[in-house]
Image (cartoon, rainbow, N blue to C red):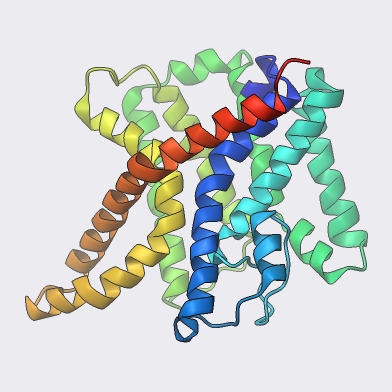
Length: 302
């Protein structure tokens, strides 16, 4: 987002591009969930609600009947934070583009302090009081780092060192999360430190490798880049894929006496393939269509 702000993109174009990238597929899946609630209520945990549907598609945080601060698509809670971050960048582009890093950081910090800790609203306190907000700050600061004299130092680090850092950070995050989910460990450490800082190091390492591995001629890296493009579709669809995999694939594996790692590998592979297909057939064309329509009707020259 810092890169976008420095490239001279106007606020309207920025808003259209972000909405067109995030909203269409999310709206489609949210509508699918609403249809399930209406026509197959036994498959869902709560009754259909127009109010919850509208708040979900408008990225407005709200508490569910269970007390959870999640939308109709439960893992869509991260998108509420993402849209808030985009709002901060949008405001920055309008009023103070030259402070493309400082302004969003100040807006996020002020929201965290005022809305998250001084507000009497439980909703505001829980949503804006999360340290997850500062993971967006990490991204802005990382951009500043790569715009500084430190870029040369990072780019001159040996490739094997950068790859090692990236791999270690990933396995550290995956292992700690798996151990906590399994109840084997209980770490009283804030998530922004436990996963935010390793994520920062991982991204910095990958950026340091950019252009140094022959991505244009390496089919493996091209595949990884494609998985990156499809990651949003994979993220939104993976709980449904995992549910189907648990119901059908795991049953077949048990019949074949395959368990544990084989089950996990097949589930991950299925989720990646499903996300890729969803991206190619629906997400990418739908996003392009919405962007074209919004550009035509909202950004027409006066």
